[in-house]
Image 1 (cartoon, helix red, strand yellow):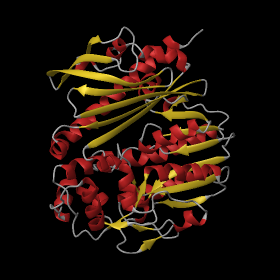
Image 2 (cartoon, rainbow, N blue to C red; image 1 turned 90 degrees about the horizontal axis):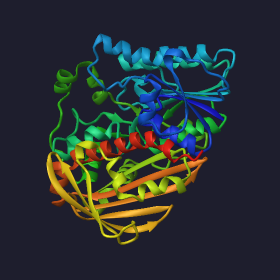
Image 3 (cartoon, rainbow, N blue to C red; image 1 turned 135 degrees about the vertical axis):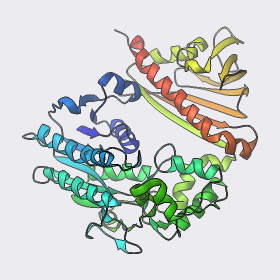
Image 4 (cartoon, rainbow, N blue to C red; image 1 turned 30 degrees about the vertical axis):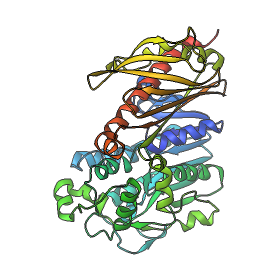
Amino acid sequence: MRVLVTGATGLVGRQLSRELFLKGHDLVVVGRSPEASFREGFSIPCEYHSWDNLKLSNIDAVFHLAGAGIASGRWTTKRKKIILESRTKTTQSLAEALEGQWPSVYIGASAIGYYGTRGDKVLSEDDSPGEGFLSEVCVQWEEAHRLFESHSRTAILRLGVVLDSNQGFLEPMEELFSLGLGGRVSDGEQWLSWIHIDDLVRAFLFALEQPIRGVFNAVAPQPVTNREWTKAYSQQLQVGAYLPAPAFMLKLVLGEMSALALNSQRVSCAKLMEQDFEFKFETLQGALEDIYQWKKKKSHRIHKAEQWISAQREDVFPFFAEAKNLEKITPPWLNFKVLRQSTDSINEGTLIDYTISLKGLPMKWRTNIATWKPPEVFVDNQLRGPYKKWHHTHSFEPFDKGTLMKDQVVYELPMGRLGQLVAGQFVKKDVSKIFAYRTKVISQLQNLWVKS
């Protein structure tokens, strides 16, 4: 199928796009960035269109996820207009571009902000909208989605709070709690309806593959109170949570946006489950254990990255078989230099020495090639360097006339929990920046590996 995705660079859109690609769909993406800058940070093969000049044809299905972040800034009058129109006007633009050649399936995003704050009441799709800005946005957003109802099978998913290991709700929470600044919000009795990112992506795919239509709450079966959330989250991070945030303080600091923390929404997913959708993560404890697997190994942290390259792995692998080429794909601010390697060509057991600069401090790094199986996989282990442990697996899989390159890094900071507490968040961001730079450069280099 030719599947169109808007919001493809967002938290949900990126993972959904990846799964659609892996399932063999032809991906069409609509975005705001110039195509060149978009492709630097988005390695999944796709056909790209700009909102400014939207011309679409032969689209079988649409996932419309685009919308400005609701937590990206204080809700000024100007910001509110951006939040609303980034949802409603883009939906209207899609309808105009697809008029006369409507897709067979249209799946739109909404949010449980639709319900406002409702205390302990269990909320279903039949409940009326609540009050406040978020509710108003969701009502108008869903009304815009319904432009497709008389032409396409239409499903709308109302998203709960999305839990993911790298972005979204958990990223600022992890930093706050890790610094010992976490705690319940207000009296802690407000309800939080959440969903694991994997289950949310599966729900979107379910809406594509099954003949469902209408509105569905995309939340896990077991919502929790803020007090229960705080306890479970602090236990998962193995930190204390002693600093409650009074409601008046949040309102003073965040203004109207404090509704994101203070609203109580106890939302049911019964309608989705009645369609035989099965959740992998029904409980908060199970979801957090999956997201923070690295905690089971004390201070270990796992970073994963994937990139599709439009060349065969036999042509891609030799680039990575040259240690000097690592300098080309490492950010210049690291001042990364290869000094020597113990064998003329890389093999299992080869030792490689580098110099690197972290925060302006030069240091030496030695790695051992623990596994070497061209052109499938190789593994390097740090023997000496800035980390207590650095175990990097590079794998190359043939996929869709190209290569799916996967990186998995398991690392541990010095000084155990103290090191994780003091520097964990900073290192996490630096590792993400390093791989983002690699993705950008490899995207630019991949044409060199394509044989004519």
